[in-house]
Image (cartoon, rainbow, N blue to C red; front, side, top):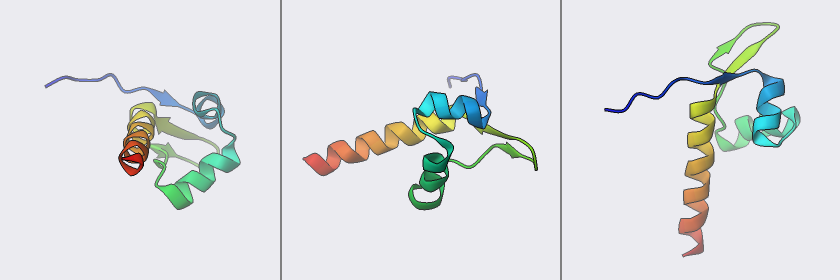
Length: 68
């Protein structure tokens, strides 16, 4: 079993990582199953980048299957 280091990002870092603004990220969360924050408080949220990567990979795979 392979262990991955957990990588986290705050919203500002997540926007850069996803090349999307926070409005788009919130829309993805609401309508497309984008991962919710790992830790969330009134002033901050942390996102697990491994979950984000998995979400993007799953979407890419689904898009390839649809094209077949």
